[in-house]
Length: 386
View (cartoon, rainbow, N blue to C red):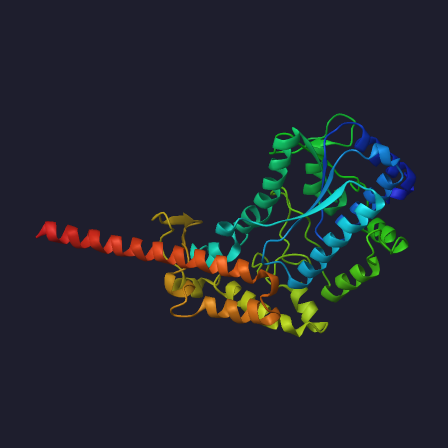
């Protein structure tokens, strides 16, 4: 069992470390916020540490970013967006140089455009295409913009060594000497600072519940209730490929098919969130397409580039067939409309959904033209043969 952070260190000592790192240079900070326990704890501790500094020393910008993949669990999206608004307002009142930002994937790389438009199969352990497109790219795009503007940035994350051996290795691999900073493994000009690196899960909850009224007006006991309802872990802001799937998470994507069962969504439905049942049904439909017998009916033999790929002695099936994705016949599109749009209403995302639908129609039209082009070429070859 991991040793508690507080067996060898104190909270005041951690506050001093945070202050020293903040004051040591002019690089702006980017704080990753997912709405889960680790990032909430991290931001609350950083907030309280900076609040202890004289206002004239708070010259360096602090950007809080959260990732919305557009297929996040709807309830957590509501919680996160509301929290970001509260953080910005409370930070302004407290005199902290904090601004909040919600990052999203570019429309052409969103989940439904990739799956329904380009025919990408439901994500799996062998083809987990969603993480890079939906999470890493959108967060890294924001980080890259700030690097271009400021030269270098420090990313402050709620990562902890006891999450997994892989996470512990990543946190220590690129560490700079005896400092608490490490280099980002792929983004030039970005550095990582994980103030909670030595916290255990129990340390996180102890801090949150002993300081249950957070500085931006929320109550951490409500967060505990979310975890209990879903009986799940959390999905952190993803900035590299070492982070495991969030499919078991209360704070992950409701479309995740990397794991066998979405126990989080099942737990939420059992706790009274019955409006999520259509979402779970659609997720189960996507998961079903990974069954070897179903694959033959819904996926092409060839991949989009025309190749046939073998994996472990078998043909690795290609993208979804047009007939499975497109609105005629109305298979997946109808399921999506019924599940996502009607379950909670399109709300503020209506404009985004309209744009996504437009891109889907363009993707289908391009595929139609490609199919027609292939047919024309075959006919021409037949004519020449005659």
